[in-house]
Image 1 (cartoon, helix red, strand yellow):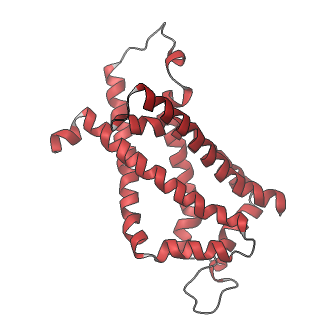
Image 2 (cartoon, one colour):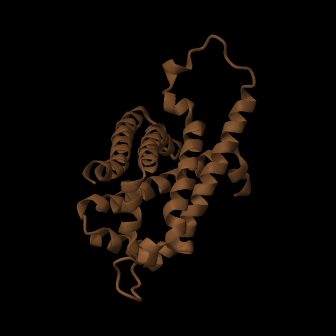
Image 3 (cartoon, one colour):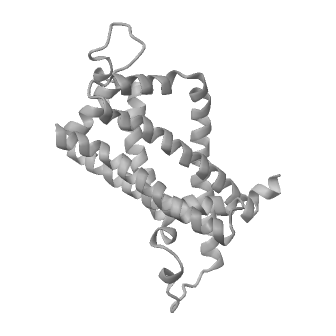
Length: 227
């Protein structure tokens, strides 16, 4: 097992599995976040957010998700390093854009930018909700209530900070670009690599990417335009 993990194909397999796991998480996270624009009272989003932080299954999945994310980052760096060592001399005449997309050639850059956005995102929301707390979380709630006013914390930032709203939109677009290649590549690595499946997966990848990019971008746009 250890030989498989440290072998090139093993690292690619683990990165693909963790990538698929993260693709599923993104859909769940987007579904919950879209509730911000479906109910201006905040009740729907607060109930969904409370479920995500209090459900026992989610509590187990959360550290697994964090581990999967770390493995995905570390393995991607190792694979990129291996590829770089295998081709130390740049090709002078070969036009790689003909054989591959811009996203596939810049996955590490896209991943780094997404990681940068994620750190800011976690600092603004996750850290305050789980650890440091914030005055807005208890505003408008019953004294001693277990449920936080997460809606107020999130919506207030979108309403008052054009910078963060634009950053959130850019983050959604970068994530969309990242998965245009990552989606089908992950499935290709685990065995869906014949021509028929590859064509289908590339089409599904673009649909998924557009849904993710538009879905995340529309949330701050909603608050920027309406409020």
